[in-house]
Length: 102
Image 1 (tube, helix red, strand yellow):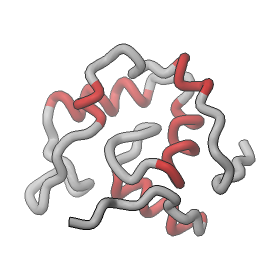
Image 2 (image 1 turned 90 degrees about the vertical axis):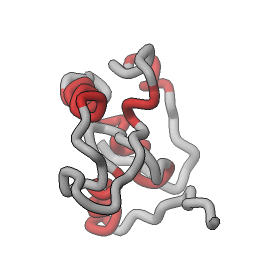
Image 3 (image 1 turned 90 degrees about the horizontal axis):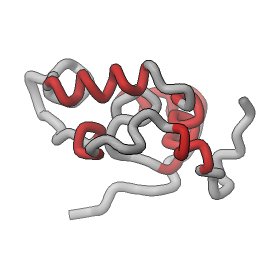
């Protein structure tokens, strides 16, 4: 799938997402500074359930491609923030939405 990451994305795939009617908090767990599962999140039943849901989703690839330039937070396409950051770096994709400064 070839995606122009600088264009506003088509989000029609979201209608088919396995997570669509589930609690969104599963996909946005609080980050950890240490002791997590090595991906920046605590290994909780909710996180594990979110990742299992992603792995069985028919639009997982669409979700991941959408998230790379647009979503700095949460689990998207079965990948955590840190995993997507690594993919962005490998593919030289700029994050078009940035983290707020505090």
